Length: 386
Image (cartoon, rainbow, N blue to C red; front, side):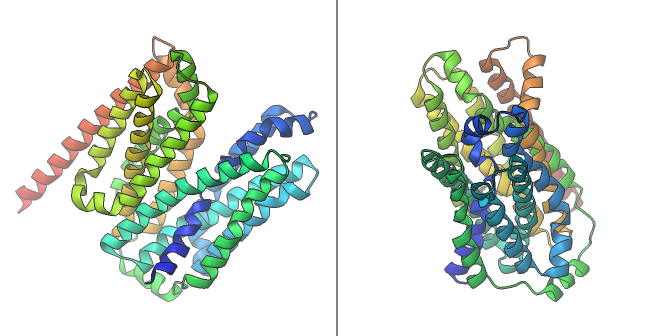
């Protein structure tokens, strides 16, 4: 499979995490629509996540009926149309509806990217592609968020032109990614056990917990800097960008990492995420906390593709349904993160942000220990069976 095909498939992943890219628009939109409840206006950044969750379970059903390539094209087309709709419509409710459509578009194509990768690539190359998908998600989020910020100088409506980014991606995918034979997909599904691997449910629980801890950096990092007295909102924004740098690095190196670390990838990523949480809590300057957030992004984006790689390498199980469940778990964790972090803060005796990060570091170390024990037990069981 040539490089342009791989790049064209990966380019669609640039669109996956763009729902919140227009968050900087909220104050200006509030000023334009003073009669609308501010909470409703704030919802336009998060409402796509809800409809991603609602659409993902039906994505493969739709693809098996109408074709995998066509379904991705339709999803990207919806993202393109819904993304730029606020430029042209005056009614707030049309803008709100466009954000719902935006979530539906992402929910339609996101699970299919893993299916297409699994059909076009195998083994180590599949691991590498899944890792790069994770890296491209981070790159897309950073590029579009930056573009929105630049266009916002003109006015908030113009900033939605940033979603025109989806047009060249749609063209690349249409021209260079081959269609997946529905017959081959059905044969693959029928030849395997359509039950979900029980470990997938454990992965979902881990995913929701770890995503919540990871999101605490986005939610709390600026408050932590102000609390410690060595940074401001601009520094907080820069640190969030550095999380993306760590994530991109991990995604690009994932194929090599998983080849070396194998089943130990999970506890290693948990350990590094725990260390990053402790470092964030204890940092006394921007240099040390910058290194900590890069490590946070790196460890998290080693963990995420590991889960998706595991379920998509297992051809004897229903990898499509497992992938959908993981994506639902990811979006639930991300959407509920502010509430979950707030609940954790209420449980702790101290209300300082430093304490929250230390507690999260402890949780990650406990997860590290549990996964190590689990791996050792499985190995002993296998050895005993032999």
